[in-house]
Image (cartoon, rainbow, N blue to C red; front, side, top):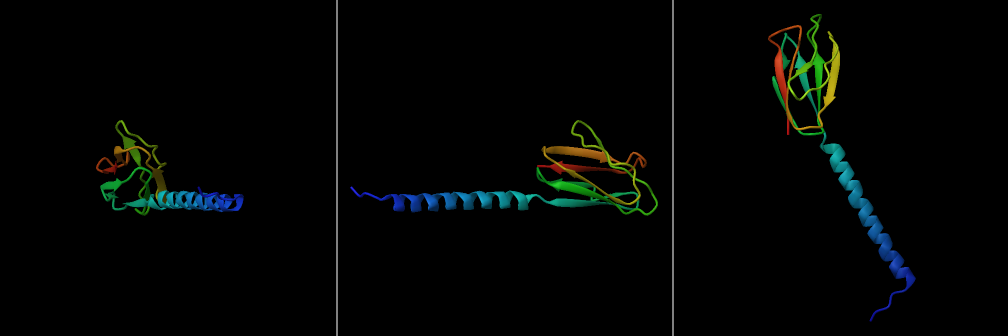
Length: 119
């Protein structure tokens, strides 16, 4: 039987705590860096792209680039997010926490329809 003194047990515990801390830090950085933001352009009375695919935790930013023409982003259907105010410039961002298909429109222009697919 090998007996270890308090110093060697303490050194072993320090290494274990250090290793666990490193694993925790790596897990946090992987989670933080995996979330992305995708941009949808609002220009020429159109959402581009019309279908945006993201993962849970990702965000979508709508950029209002249509000059003096006002637009909004209003979700439709069972899976909803809040509409942006009617804007002519600037941006609106939503972070998606649930999987599903989120359909949205511009309520000012009947032909402006698009969707975000979250997996």
